[in-house]
Length: 281
Image (cartoon, rainbow, N blue to C red; front, top):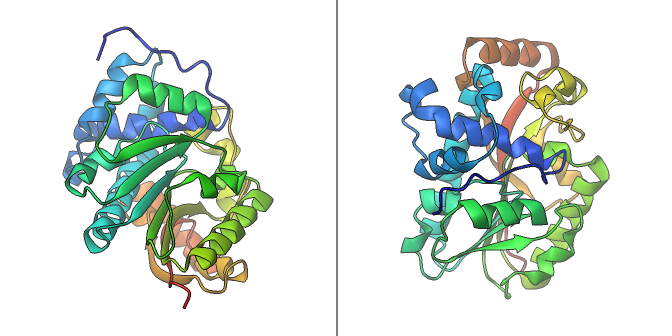
């Protein structure tokens, strides 16, 4: 890689939020050494970016929560490609993440990995991240699901779709359209699908302007999920396979907020969920 600094000025309001988890991954060895997370690619990217990421470092709950979340997504992806050696994996709103490299996709030659994002983000990815075998970028807008037909997804091929730190920034109608289009595509292909994402509660969405890190960007949360089972109203074949409270391991303040919210509402304030959709007969 050349050493010339790269600017993020062309990033849109939502795309700017990719800097938050990027900062968390790059600073993880210093801020959260007990989580044993290291992302050399993130450290290299930060060294080349013409932006001050220290503005996020003080938000210790978000920095820690982002690493807990990243570790969960890494495990989900690693287990999926180990169990489905011919799979398609799609990272939705991939940002500047190097998950394909972290999970060792180069050791799975029959797996296709696609990092999907908007054109300015993909442009940055290509400038800042080294190519990974069996991984490719796709320029697309998650809010316009026509991109589903642009992927190497033949009939019966199992597929994993992961959306980390993404869906809460979409409008509710956009999330609904994505879920319905994904279900229709899986049905046409008679393909088994795993869908994994993190979600914010209605309270968290209403208060996103107060979020210590998000308020330092131009973005705000829009879509909320009350319970994972609520998504089954959009696709009745989705089955909740795993549901993880991220706040429980994100430090004392976040854990306390999570417990209080659960006590008052019976729901998580912020969590990750993994669904499976069996292949159509």
